[in-house]
Amino acid sequence: MACALNGSQLQLQALSNDRHSRIRGLDLCRSMPRIEISRLRQNKSLKIQAGVTVSTTKDTAALGSDIDWENIGFGIRSTDFMYVMKTDRSGEWRSGELLPFGNLELSPAAGVLNYGQGLFEGMKAYRTQDGSAVLFRPKENALRMISGAKRMCMPAPSVGDFTAAVKSTVKANVRWVPPHGKGSLYIRPLLIGSGAILGLAPAPEYSFIIYVSPVGNYFKSGLAPISLKVETFYHRAAPGGTGGVKTIGNYAPVLKTQLDAKDQGFSDVLYLDAAENKYVEEVSSCNIFTVKGNTISTPETLGTILPGITRKSIIELARDMGYKVKETAVTVEELLDADEVFCTGTAVVVNPVGSITYGDRRVTYSDGGVGKVSRALSTSLTDIQMGRSEDKFGWVEQL
Image (cartoon, rainbow, N blue to C red; front, top):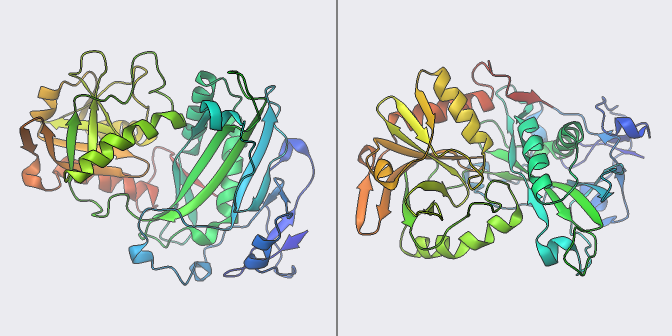
């Protein structure tokens, strides 16, 4: 089967059925018959084997002309294709497929629905100045999913299968990668217990799924200071729990405190440790850093804090820029005494904190503006991600 993409049309071509080379790149001939994406979506029985990929293009004319890239925001938008691959408890993954983006069919007894057996990752593809699309450190996401899967008693795709599937999915949706400087293509790999199970036990079947959506800034204000409230009653994670892995169950519990904080005029919530309630851990969905003089500090990851990939990148980048970086316990008092505070994460990248409220005490940083360290790190990282500066770390991967 073959079809071609030009604007709203997609080029696809089947490859070898060799199971050990499930996803390979190839150039696609322009003489292939064309199938409109709308018709492709309607054909729910259409399956494209994982030994299929779509050629990337530097022609930005293929981008969605009906999208207001200046005001896209951060939210879900239906794209063209998603990726699905399945296995049983043995971890012998069957060949994956690119399918038209749409709903999944799950048993109401699926392990993910009843017992929360699931993980996800967050990553991005960027459009560079020359119009090509690139990924940022995809192997790190693969390794983190493998680590989380062990904690959640789930088989995980290998690093090779994970990265190949991500690249295949992005290529199939390359027209949705925003123009340079206008946003990114958010990539969401999922690993879920999709098999039916009644008793408390690992699911008999697992699904690895990837979908994508073009996004703008996570916070509407872009690179502008946010305000945080320190939460002193509820906690995000506890020692011995799952706070250090990206399991789906870590996120719904923060919604109440996050919504309450937003109702009070704050941007988000900063959580403390559950043991002593005095050490800073992380924001609802991102890591936190403090700056004091030439020293940058961030809470060490000891099982209750997610080891963020942006966090890791900022640590490496800051050290290369001459800052002293410490991964250590950070008390609330040290937080409030800092010169600057900023958050990091796939969604926010680097976001400065303008103020933090702890009980009746409110502290403002950098006169409520963007601190020089936050700005420098944000600029340096995004320049690497978007191909505007040399990637001497080897973080960026071409599709």
